[in-house]
Image (spheres, rainbow, N blue to C red):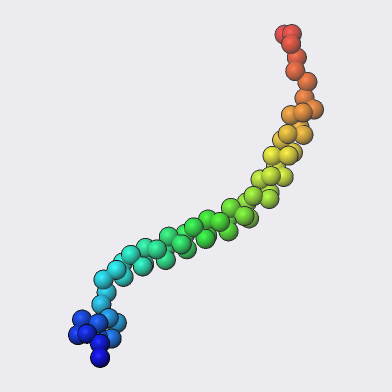
Length: 65
């Protein structure tokens, strides 16, 4: 037999730590969304930086006024 403090009804009704679980779930969702958005942005930003690099590398530096 279970000890009185471990009765299933008490365990299921206990809300201690529920806020912590909520924050962990919300934080995990935010991190996951950030990773998804980062993955979507990574490709186009890399392409844009390559275009800037190519443009800058074709420019001449004038040493006189």
